[in-house]
Length: 639
Ligand code: FEO
Ligand code: CA
Ligand code: CA
Image (cartoon, rainbow, N blue to C red; front, side):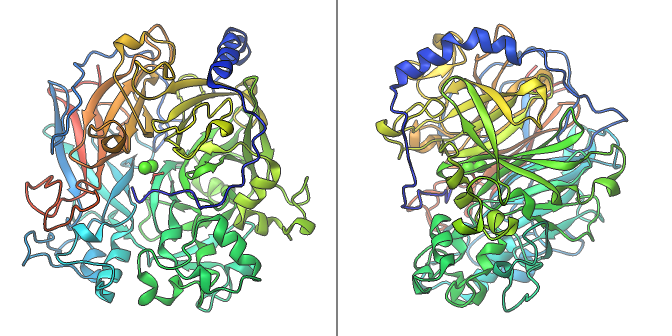
C-alpha cells in the first residue's frame, strides 16, 4: 500500500464520452475479426539451453485440478487441500554468518541501521528465482531476488510517531528498503535459505549505484554529493520487477515521491517545480526523512529526486556488481519491467506508471540479444527507443516514440535533449496524447502465445465523462486486465490490437466481464496487481486491496487465458489479515510457488501495540515474509 494517489492535477483531455455499454458492444462485435488478425503469430522460443529468471519454456496446456478455497479474513496463509505453504524468510532474518535474528517482543526488538543492513528487509514484493548454477534449469537450488518496497514504522517500533521519529529509526528504515538477494535450496521437499551463501547480498537505500544511459550526467541529475550526475546512493520503493534473458533483474522504483519533502519551499519560477508537481512530490513532508538526511529536502537538493523513479539493473549472480539505473527506460512510478525477445532479436521491456491516469510504456533495444553472451548484452538497455501506448476504440493501438526532436518533443516545448525527455517522461507522454490508464500495475507476456497482459488495478477517480474504450468504468474500484497482441507477433512492432480479458468485481454486476466465461461459475476478484504465468500458460493473478474493496483477504487466483476454460477464475491462496499478495514466482518445473506476504496488519489505527495481524509468529510485530508453496508429495502447482 502507501499507494500513489492522484497528484491533484488533471491533465485529462477526454474526447471519448461513450457509455460502457456502447464501448463493450463495439469491442466484442469486433472480437471475431481481431482474433484472426492477431492469431498464429510465431513465438520466438529461445534456443541454446536454459534461460535464467522468469522466462520459462512454453509447455502444453496444463489442466487445473485443485479444490478452490473460500474467501476469508483469517490471519493466516490458506492453500487448497493437498498443498503446504512453508515460511522461508522474512523481515529481520539474518542473511550473513554471525548475524542474529531480530528479537521479538517489546524489550528484544534490536533495530539499528547496521543490523538491518545484514538482515532481510521490510515489505517483500517482487520475487525472482535464478537457478544455480547459472545457465542451469535447477528447481531445487537458486538465488532468490526479493524487492523490499517500503516500511511500516508504526508496526516496527513501540511508541513510534512521525513527530518523535529519531535519526536511528530513519536510518534503519533506509536500510530496510531495497533488495535482498539470498541463496535458497530445496531438500527433503522443503525450502530453506543459506545464511552463509556467497551470493547473499543486501542492497539498501544507501548502496552505491551508477546512473547510465541518455540522461546520465544531465545537469538535473547533479547534486552537491555527485557533481557528475552519474552516481547515486540507493534504490527506494522497489515494487515489482522482471528478469532479463541474460539473467539480471530489472528492479523498479515506484512511489519514490514520498521520501522527498518541501516542494513548496522551491521557487515557483523554477521549471523543476512543475515536473516535481507532475510526479506528486510532497509540498511539505510525508516520511520525515529530510529532517535527518538533507538529500531528501527539495529546498536543499532539488535534483536528488530526479535520481529516483528509474529501472535498476542488478546482477544477482555477482554480489560485487554495481547496480545500474537505466535511464533509457524512462522515469516514472515504475511498477514492473518485463523483458521479452522480439522476433527481430531486439529485447523489449514493458513497464507501467502506477498512478491514476498515467501511462503504459515499452522500451525496444537498438541491438539484438546475443544468447549465451552476458557480456554482449550487458549494457544493451542503454540504447533504444521508449514508447508510450495509445489505445484506440476500434481495438487497435499505437506505440508512440518518446524521441527528442520528433513531434512536439522539442526544445521549444521544454525538452532540450533526450535526457530531458527521460527525466520528465510523464510530461513528454502528456504532449504525445497517450492514453490515461487506471493505474498500470504488472505486465507479463505469455510464454505460450506471446500475448501481453497488462493489469489496471483500480481508479476510483475516473468519472463517467472520462471513460474510454480501454478504461471503460467510472469509479473503477475493482480493476481490469487488458490482453494485447503485438502486430505480426513482433514485440518490437509499433502497432497492436487489444481485447479486454477481465473486468473485475462481483460477477453478478453486469459491468464485470470474465473473458466471456459463465459468470455463475467464477469467483469474485478485485484489485489485480501482480501476475505470473504458470504451467501451460495459465495466468496467476495476485491482488492488493481486497480488504478495502470487497471486504476479504487478498488472494492469488488462477485463470486459463486460452481454450474452453478461458476466464474460469478460481481462488488458490489467501494471505493473512490486511496483507497484500506479492511475488508470485514459480520454479522452472512449476512445482514451487514463491509468494511474498506484504504488509500484514497494515491498516489505519493498526500499530505494533495493537496490530491487526500477528503473522507469522502469532506475536507482535507482524513480519512481512516470503513463503514457499508446494504440492504434498510433489507435482505441478494447480494440477
Ligand atoms: Fe507497489 Fe503499484 O504497487
Ligand atoms: Ca504492485
Ligand atoms: Ca500494489
